Length: 175
Ligand code: 5GP
Image 1 (cartoon, helix red, strand yellow):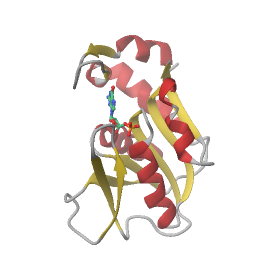
Image 2 (cartoon, protein in one colour):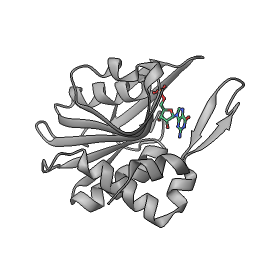
Image 3 (cartoon, protein in one colour):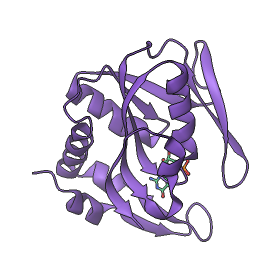
Image 4 (cartoon, protein in one colour):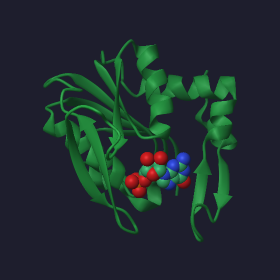
């Protein structure tokens, strides 16, 4: 049985990274452990709730690791949401505010067809700015967004409030 508690135990806290005052939740020990990585994919797959998914959308860059494995396991396609300037074909982009400055993410305009069932996956939900931009891009393409799923959710930052009416799932939560 896949256990969220054992995944949580393996997540490493790195104080003052990438800047003073931030505690970074390092997921690389989860990735490096074959059993925990498999369990994290199983639990993320479960968030689809048994719905047949057409596309798993992953967010640059750690989201790709989980989303691609989930796509393979569920027999779905994989779609990247990337940082600005990385995708080679026609894109739709959206900029959003970070704590300091702005960022922009993009998706290929033909990556998802209207009505396709989509699961959006990222490693961690903090303020929700990144996921909110990805959700808006998917809404704009007419995706049927089944759920937005994270390995980790930082509850104190209320990121889920930025994601509208969509179903939000997370495997491990921190206050
Ligand atoms: P948000 O836009 O919700 O504030 O930040 C979430 C994004 O930043 C995610 O794509 C995630 O990869 C990254 N991120 C922010 N803080 C952390 C952290 O502590 N650990 C990890 N693994 N990713 C983080």
